[in-house]
Image (tube, rainbow, N blue to C red; front, side, top):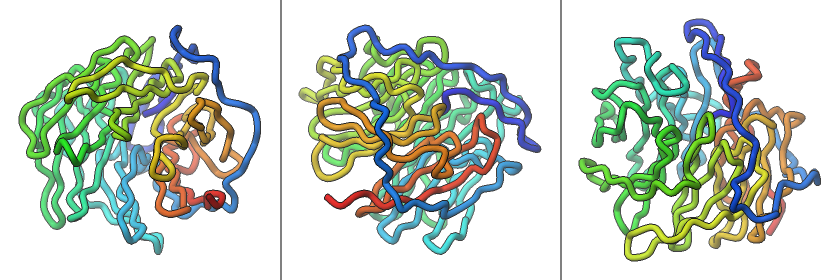
Length: 327
């Protein structure tokens, strides 16, 4: 999700700019983003999307063949972007009767987090401000999308992750400041954590989310933090602030098999950073690499996928590919 929204593309309308707070959480450690530039070059823009159609890529899941499954926020769509450069729309969610103006904070309906299963089934979130449509959706190959869990219409479901062992989804709500769980088959929604570290501070709070090493990891956009919450008998343990100073942090991913290296997008600053186990950060990619408000990242092998939504730049939403340094 974005640091600020200023959408004026044809057919989308205008959303008021709302700046996010850059202040770190009071409990945060001293580690912050450093100024060093350590490019993940070579990088290139692999796909350019159509801003006028609302093709603002918000989240990504990568298939084994390199296909990127993305949510296009403002067009309310899910799409497949092939390695050869083709873009195929897989689903379009219905617009709410009010056009989405009652979607909290953002005032437009949007598709957000996405997860892909090994059988090709996609799960994704839709925030519309409408109780009849806001929720978690399942999209099986060749089928129409189906809502499997209703989510609060006064919230903004954003990040989505799946715990294969527990067979349940974890999702963030950036307005309500919560992490909730939903069983794989859908139905019941339980608030798993409403810790204060997840709360917004004027704009959007809990954002990206991942399951890793017996813990739930999440970002807080307003506070610029990366958080780790241990899972203890299915319940949340004490929140640890793993890194701070990450102004406008959105989505993130892990590199390798452990939890000692994170790559994250900083939406407003137009950067992608690497964060080590001590919370130290360094810049990998910048606007000079073509970034336009980067929203989401994924890693396949040594290839880094970076989505840019151009929410505030208003220029060239795209998919960039970069090669990570050998490890």
